[in-house]
Image (tube, rainbow, N blue to C red; front, side):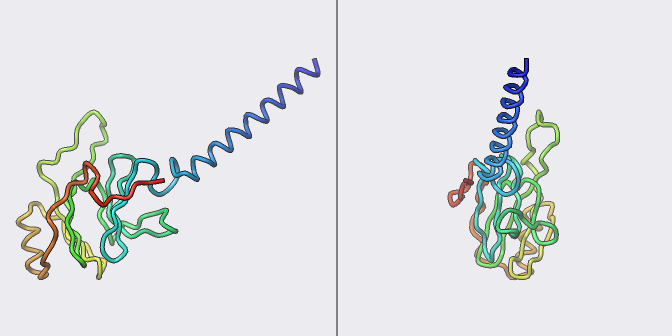
Length: 163
């Protein structure tokens, strides 16, 4: 009887240890935890800004911190689901939509909100209801030579994929 109890305790101890090692491994490779993981991507933008695709759906623009494990969005970036973007050396334009909480519903991309991000001043202009209002703000701020709008799905041509 004693042999079976000890054997059971040894097996349980080894199992718990292996599970703990597996969880640590997942954090290290970025599959869970913070920052971009496998299949996620990053696009480098002007003045240390980055656009991150996280969990296959949420696409945000912000400033990375904590050794690239987190992205500061509040006050200096754009959250939600960015479906298209454009940029120059100082500005980033973004078309953003809301991601529905009901996964059965698709994302409505027919009427996005537009944002203009000044990466030098770390200032966000918008949301604008349409591209005309966005263009008016660009004219008012004398923003020129923005690239053409580029879709975020499929991933942009200069996307860097996670570990």
